[in-house]
Image 1 (cartoon, rainbow, N blue to C red):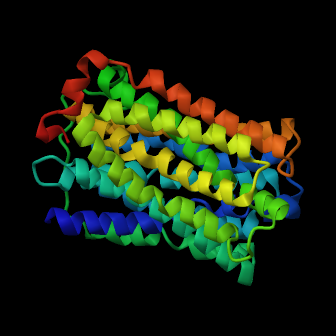
Image 2: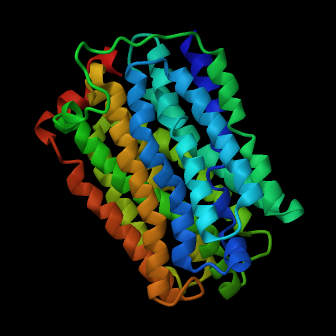
Length: 406
């Protein structure tokens, strides 16, 4: 299968598998009213999706060192569909919603990184950095479609219908996985399942993994809370009716794809670690700006949201391509598993930390609460800076790894 059609089909499959992804976060104000949730509880449910992912992904992705990744893809996408439909039918409050949403996240653990492995296993020899970045950056388009679909369907037919609609999306990746040619990985003799010691000893790869954790903390948090933040801004400042939460959440999400692609292209020219450091510093600065502007004019807030929405994902492709390039080929699945586990565990903590900050400083209707929330995000972005310096002495070999490892 040629690289172009392969990448296109995998990106299309990922768009489908991501449709449930932000359904709860997009409707947090609705559920807060319906179930009487605090900001902390809302953040915990949003984060439960990522916790379910983080618990399952070590097994689902490490298995790709031993079995064809497309088999994991089929299982994961089917579980994602079943869990999202079950949420529509059975979620009735905090505990049931958190449990079912965690199961949906566990299903996505069989789709995202196993999908990347299915892609890289079938790419022709050569530098796969751009193909990997196209796949990872299409994540943002899928998230934007999730925001859009969930909010539009909920407005017309209710939240249960919204979850049913987006829950059918992962079946697209199921169909793509079934169409892929077979690939049988050859595990290293004596290699043990879930043995991450070789990955932890790989300092260049580990630096990208830890940097990805800081990136995911911030990215998951802003996506989980952007609808609530814009509703607060619009109610306080009287923004035009057509610039509503749907428009803002989708726009901020969709600009992540070109930002990620451009970031990776710049990384190929100036070096991955240098690009990632610059992006993290810019992201922290914009988060501080949003905190300070939370009581300011809506136009300023919107401009900073768009700038922040560009900065946060701009290192996504560079982080993941750097991890793949630095990984030992015999432990690529294990390296991807650790990368995703760290990233999505941080994705659970991010929305929860913002919810805690909001509750501690006046709630989602308070400018002080949002100041605290965005200062938390700034600290998370800054925390990634020392992580990417890990193994700097070997960074050149990680950034220009042999073609067969990419």
